[in-house]
Amino acid sequence: MAENLTKAELVDAVAKTADITKSAAAAAIGCFLESIAGHVNKGGKVTLVGFGTFSQKTRKARTGRNPQTGAPIKIAASKSMSFKASKAPKAAKPKAAKKAAPKGKKK
View 1 (cartoon, helix red, strand yellow):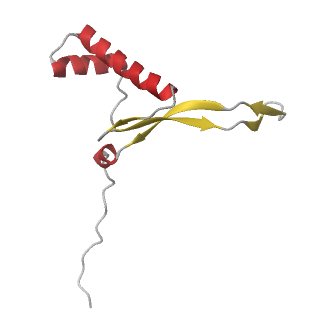
View 2 (view 1 turned 90 degrees about the vertical axis):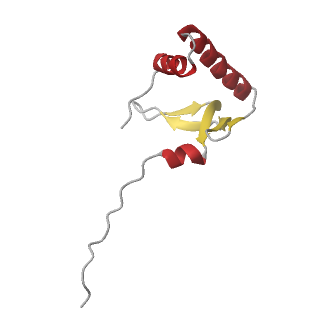
View 3 (view 1 turned 180 degrees about the vertical axis):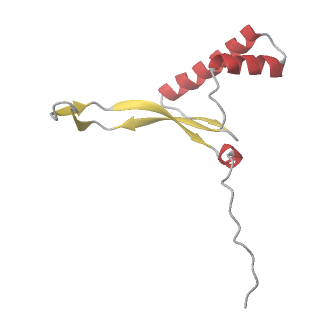
């Protein structure tokens, strides 16, 4: 299983692949992420063909329970960013190996 990739490691990989400085790669990645977050926070969607779609989801207000006392509490409505992967990254995931049934002679 692959390990998590940190932002610093991503910057290193982009700098090496694009043959640019680490500071230029960090600036490009920072602008990229800020642009996506800014557009989504305004209620828009960002679709990267072959990768996925970033959008904003709204959660309704609801009643929860305090786990210590069991008393009901009100949980306010909130908005969060979500990501839905396109079919290409999903297809890139390793599939579980199928076990073939043993072949034998029929009698």
